[in-house]
Amino acid sequence: MGTVDDYLAGLEPADRAVIAHVYDVARATAGETEQGTSYGMPALLHRGKALISVMRTRKHIGLYPFSGRVPEVVAEALDGFEHDKGTIRFQPEHPLPDDSIRAIVTARMAEIDDPSLRRS
Image (tube, rainbow, N blue to C red; front, top):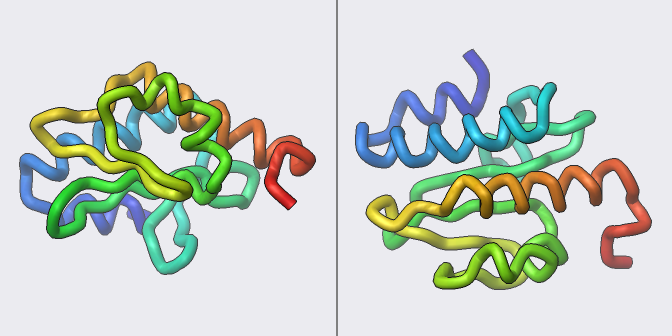
């Protein structure tokens, strides 16, 4: 088991299903990933760098792309979802569409693969 799996095991079933789905779509999009932590959060890693974390908070589920740029780049795919510089928020009953998850993961992978895309 890894950090993401350990985190999922401790969630309520309804939250676990929604969050696990996001991680599953992210893994399918990114290809080879590993589990780890970043900023104290369970995360999927791409080439050793934090790709995404998805966690339950008291009021919502947050997807953290470890980038202030990614939510701006994929803003069109996030229509109807609250987001800001480093967080995308959604409710279990209104989950992120798979296409939005793929757009987030693809944009973050591009940043990891090409550091010039990151903000300086």
